[in-house]
Amino acid sequence: MTGRAGRLPAAFMRGGTSKALMLRRADLPGPLADWAPAFLSLMGSPDPHGRQLDGMGGGLSSVSKICVVEPSSRPDADIDYTFVQVSVRDARIDLSGNCGNMLAAVGPFAVDEGMVSLADGPATLRIHNTNTRKLIRAAFAVADGRAAYRGDLAIPGVAGTGAPVRLDFLDPGGATTGRLLPTGRVRETLDVPGLGAFAVSMVDAANACVFVRAADLGLAGTELPAALEAVPGLLGRLARIRAAASVAMGIARDETEAAGITHVPFIALVAPPADAATLSGEPVPADGIDLSARVISNGVPHQALPLTATLCLAVAARLEGSLVHEVARPAGEGALRVGMPSGVLTADAVVGREGGAWRAERGSFFRTARLLMRGEVFYDAAAPV
Image 1 (tube, rainbow, N blue to C red):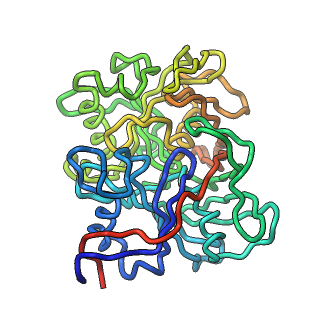
Image 2 (cartoon, one colour):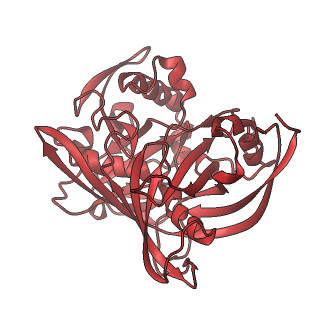
């Protein structure tokens, strides 16, 4: 280990409804797990006040992230992308899952950093996410040899507009556990120690998720994040359901280990379409959505929806018999419109059967991204030699 102070070349970017430090793998010798003290310092964690004022984080899981990018050695990919979730309050990083929102920034970052060379105009990059060992195809515009960020696409939760980035998750099933349905069932009863039995659907597409009916917890499913946090004991109960699901899905051996794996599985509350209001006060009419969803990310209600959890939600809505399929308005072959705290998010998923088993063929989204800063970022912690 070296001295306590250090610096790294970095960019700071928004991808979808998240923000992250973007680092080159070549600047981080050795295993990324050994960089945990430096990563924590970069983001200002652990912070018992939950604000991360002494780092680049913003006090929420959606803005306490690091993306590590490098040219890929795989013949079927152009770049490798490793996602690092940094806990806000605890001295912990998590490499167990992917971040779909930040995927919108990964391709543009690789182009801007000269990791790949693309002609001006529409471009497509094949991204290998090392956390889940899955491939994602990112399509975006290039101008003057750099990624284009200006455009007319607006996405819920982000003010203004940007250039569209289309993300196609290829064969997303089993990203965390190796199986689209980790237990082999689309719906089951989960026994949660100290709480009792809950009907759940446990699905693994892009990232593992456990879906619970909001009504089974006495909720409407339209509550905003602050209202969810204000319900006495709710987040603790959801954490226990998530831990039990983690064990049932084979992600963790026991509840103690599950508590240390903070990124996956996501736990999502689902409900039928209903009139609701967004964080900005704008109304979301019931006839404009196919279902309502609220996601808990790293123990905190998400201000929007994690992109990978939304993809998993869209896949689950296509699985007949799942809780998501039960509460969702029949959408035929159209994209799923999900009512969430920041508005309406649209997700498209193609699901079929092979040999009698369900298979997720792909899931697609449009996001935007923007480069916010490029320079050096400083840390005050031990780092590998």
